[in-house]
Image: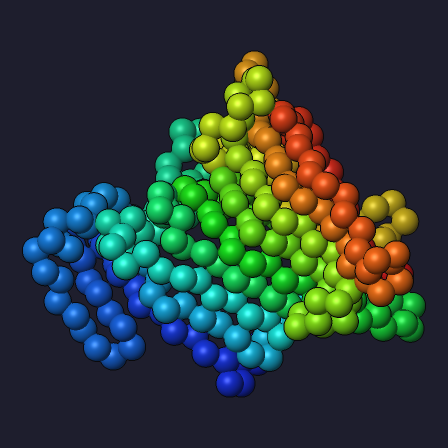
Length: 300
């Protein structure tokens, strides 16, 4: 399995301010400047193990590409990535990202990244990328993937090594609580809305057994109790694949319950009667991931 990652920032703009707290000591830096914290900001900094940081005026754009290449030469790429985030000026220091090492009895230590609580919903991400598939001598430019107003609250990513002997790769845990304004697939380019698939008003998070949203993150995978894994595997025929999996839950409580709501799904095209097809709203009241095994191989 071959994996290629290419990056060329060119005129890319990457502007970020990191507000860092280590053992209760806060440091604020932007470019080469140092800024002193006033007493109010210093009082808001939470002293704890690990590193706390945040971003201000974050924007990344330019000829950055990510390419996955299989051994037979087929590839899937995302290019011309654009990523930015709005800020919550009143919570830069009091509600940061945190990164720490977590000890697990009988298991390898894990790295854990936790997102801000984002109670005001002011931290909103924007994303766009062009995608392409090359396989069997054919190149297919699929257009653009655009995500507008992604709000994430208190999500968490945990990375560690697989607990199963002889298994390579990265084991992970992932918890998500998302509100997304729009997910758009635009075959004619990110700026051309004349033809597109639009998913509007997406909400994903934990739910009670009766389907009531809890407003908390849904644990799709737990690094200790129901770990996910990302690795490369080769089958009996010698074909390699990128493997993404989530193991069976190891507790009697079973897998955590989540819910998914999509306010509206629509297609827009000049080939459709009236130029648009509206499929209405969709809702999955309760769902669980008991086991997941996905193998990805570029091809057409």
